[in-house]
Image (spheres, helix red, strand yellow):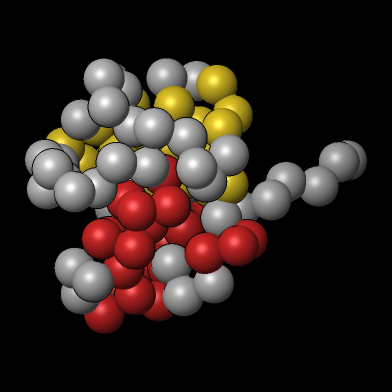
Length: 83
């Protein structure tokens, strides 16, 4: 699946997107965040406060408990403010 990173999440990870194959036990967005955070220091820094990370699966905003099976693309971004 393709994973995209936006705003300061992208800056901390050091890339805007990548293609990954998470292990079978990674079933939800929350699981994916936890797995990504273990991939190295830059990921750990980007996902150090998972409650503030927002996600979208195939361009639809989702909650952390959303199932990722079958997703073509998952995007991670910080909360957005108006203006």
